[in-house]
Image (cartoon, rainbow, N blue to C red; front, side, top):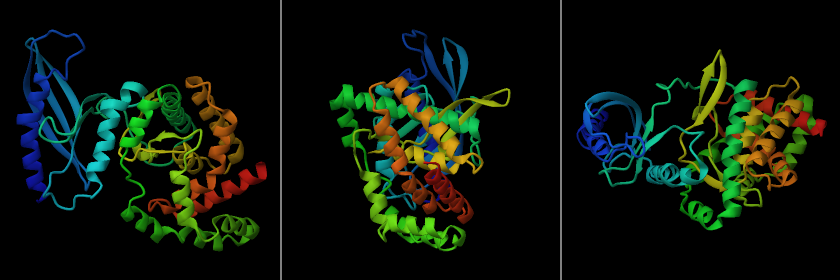
Length: 364
């Protein structure tokens, strides 16, 4: 099905079926509200058409006892069967995110995510997630590396998410196990592993040209021991006492910030399709190492890692600081390998992260 046909079919569904039904179900009402509500109108714009979802920016006007109010929305639809180039993991990814918004947030809280008006896999005719449009609420994405203020803020948000999972695992294990058991594997599918395999020699090629750091390069090669892909899969699936449900792709692409006087004051995390049960290092390592510069690099890594651990312990004091710190530091090389798989990260940036690893070794 062509993109204009997808747009026509989906916009008709959104305007004439989904939104009126949401209004009827009082999805836009405050709890305990008794106002009479009516659907008024909607403007719909296609924002993104991908292999895993259709994303629309929608403004819906709802009348509350005759008074109109506008709601800017970000609306995600699962592509229907017959659409062109639908990813084989599309439903699994959508299922993960739907579970996050409809079930997990009841235990994790909602202070680090956009408001969710609806998350459903079929009751409304199609699988759909309806969120507040964070851009209309004053949040923006950072298009490049995160400076220290942004990095500290997003690390604190990540730490809260991880800590609440660790606490849930310890205090309500049956609920945590239900969430974990229902996660669909997205990151380590056969297609994904084939893509990573193609990129697997990149790190070794970069090490080859680091002639000024030959001893360090040889040490990294020994650690990899010609089993880079096995190493990645092993660490990504390892479960230990500090493992929890992780975002799975925690990067600046999935973060939006709100500002006051030019400084970031709040961060929201989006796109929860890639969640997995694993080490928190899978989330923290890549974003930490990539966004710390060489200047005072080891000290800055230790400072931000301590901030992360302190924030985890503020939410869940029973976690072992020693084991959590060791688990993350031991997987810094894994984080570097993951960064080397990413197409948008240059060889120079991967080399910079490798040199930061060397500095950390020297610092330790």
